Image (cartoon, rainbow, N blue to C red; front, side, top):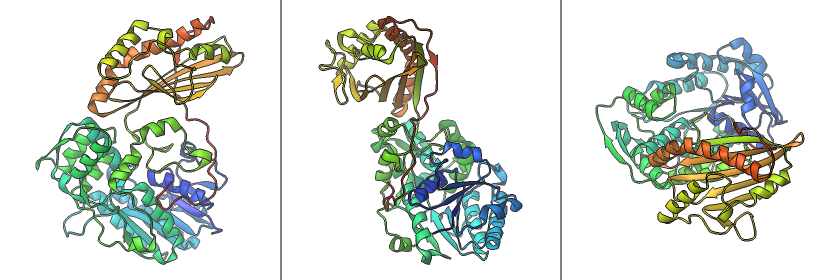
Length: 513
């Protein structure tokens, strides 16, 4: 395909992942955005195959230049957040403008991702009704449209999945509306991307509508149970109440989760309808291995791997699993992450500080608050954990070795030490020390990240955060003092993702990376 592919909604949840998948296949991608500066948040923003274009679907005069020369358009926009209560009206106008501009520009196909709902003859939610109306408007134009109707999408960053995550994580007992017994056929986001890319490559899908779903037909109640099992949580007690309206449900979701109310309300209204595939023709046309609900949730919950990678691309610039959080996703994507980060400028060389860092553990301690460390070690040992050891790690620090209640994940002298806590705690904790020389000085950085598990983890992290902040500041000063070097006061900072490289051309696997 020599002509570029236009992706509308390129900075959105599905759009951001689709652009990465298309670029990985060597395609030229034109990303239509209202605010090009938002592209800087995406890992592919400087890719040589990407062509950003500023346009607004609600401004018809901006579209001809954006569509010029394009063969295929992916229509992935939705006005639910930007337009608030008038999103349905805005969606109608945007669809009419795009259909007319695509016909004028000579576009050959439009691929549209819509919503799936059972045809019961009853009223649909405003959200789903708008999705179906957009499909009809696009199909009424002269450009052939491929419509994919999707149910709940599973993966970090998906609003419906994040609602599921936060409800199960934070509520051991849930009072829910009757929609908890509604039938759904959730699909992993990697399979959604697989169908979108597959339709691009299969011209026989033009002018047709397809239901896409995963292999499981399941209720939301069962989905809550699977999530709790995969997250290592106790089984949640679910009490359906007939008096909870969708609006009250949305308010409750907004109070419990960080998902904005503008998203929660339309999604909660849509949960009242069953969403299962009425036909599965797409499976024969675009075969791929469909992830089960359990597999998709398990992949989305690989939080330790996500934290360790700390980048936007996989090894050698390849794609990360689409179910992981991606750079540019909403702030609520990926679950709760409690992070403490301090840095300290020290008049020393990196090797001098590293000689101190390499003595961590055992009788050498942690250069600050020794009695508190020993108390925590005793508590951990009493709970069945490893506690503190009498001696430092034999042979020094090296990846894979254990000392006290730590396992060394990364050891890169004299620059980086990353430890995984194996103490008994309701969550996973990573502790990282970095040293970087800058202008005759060294910057010593300490980053602690805690991934709470359930409500107990949230309480644990919140209660101990003030003490941890004081402890880590003292620890940085202690390392500098042990090196015999003057230092100022530690300051807080926000760590940036590690540098990334561009992804190579080449097709991803059918079910995503």
